[in-house]
Image (cartoon, one colour):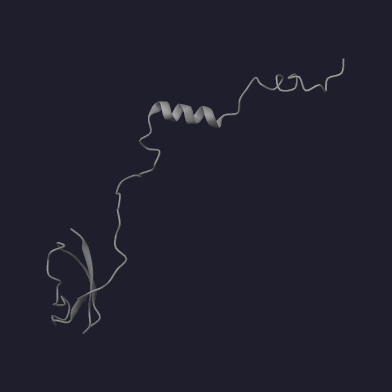
Amino acid sequence: MPTYDYICDACGHVWEEFQSITAEPTSKCPECKKKKARRRIGPGAGIIFKGSGFYQTDYRSDSYKKAAESDSKPASGGGGDSKSSGSGDSKK
């Protein structure tokens, strides 16, 4: 069920109300009791995740994490091979 924002045109009171989508909008202000309340147009809520944190990488498999870790490390042992690979610059 969504939460709707309301404002009273008589007294200016602003409040939120937790209602069903099919429920009729509230018209009575809880503050001044006049029937001048109307729903405010808001940006919407979107999805709200509650908890310690939700990240794209939270649910990755162990094999994916290991492959990503090995990709981020520099390759070792290849320093001498690239210079001796037939470039023709070595003096004999």
